[in-house]
Amino acid sequence: MTLSPIARLMAAASEIILGKEHELRLALSCLLARGHLLIEDVPGTGKTTLAHTLARLLGLQFQRIQFTSDLLPADILGVSVFERDSATFRFRPGPVFAQLILADEVNRATPKAQSALLEAMEERQVTADGQTMPLPEPFFVIATQNPSSQIGVFPLPESQLDRFLLRIRLGYPDHAAERRLLQGEDRRKLIGHAEPVIGVPDLLELQEAARALIVADRLVDYVQALIAATRQNAEFLAGLSPRAGMGLLAAARAWALLEGRDHVLPEDVQRIFPHVAGHRLHRAGDGRTPAPDELARLLESVEIP
Image 1 (cartoon, rainbow, N blue to C red):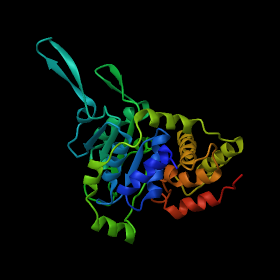
Image 2 (image 1 turned 120 degrees about the vertical axis):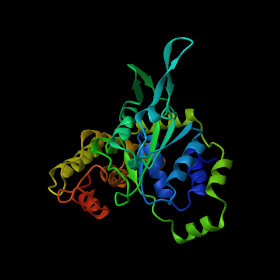
Image 3 (image 1 turned 135 degrees about the vertical axis):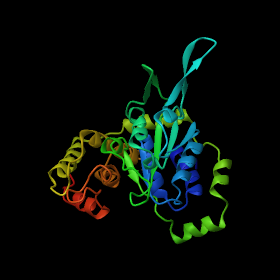
């Protein structure tokens, strides 16, 4: 039996990222929904490996930007250089001009450097020296973030957080997966030997297929009810924005496509909802993001159509 492109991609990725099929599906849902992914976890859990793996298996042009406290916007976007021969300035594109960007430890950079990604992530373009330049297609940002309790981090502002469609945590591997990691080949070598499973044209086709999935009116009613519940809940400082609602539907469509369906179910919305809402909501008491059990209670409070 011939496997579908999605099944081949999942199988190849699962050989490198062990024991994290659910997180891999979330990352692929984010990519198929044309969103950006935020991974928050302690160092050493495979955040960078996940980004490298997706870039390799999808055949995407890859750039890694290491965010540090002295990083400048020009280090991300590029800089104009004066050429003596022509007596003109020529723009040299920065690392953001790639199809998959790994913004590593994004919250170790200052807010000024973080803001350099805002236009790129939202508009998929960069404006410099009065010129607007489109970014490659597809364009996907995977940002890793250290826990706020660690030293030397700058919290991401709400405007930056809202640019990320999904936030996930990889967590520690289970016992069996960790044993395979300890006894197996180095993950970086496996990535180096891996071949692209699907190409850019196939990826763009899958993104269009996800966008075309059927969403019934009653499901839209359900999404609106969830959004309204976040706005009416006194536990939160503010509810979800319309952009978050559109992102929730887009990610649910992508999840349904990964499940092999041509329509979206309420269960798809429920699977995606905590990862769309978790980093956008803040508790009224201490400003922290809600815990998983709080988001679960919110889901339970809204009736499924």
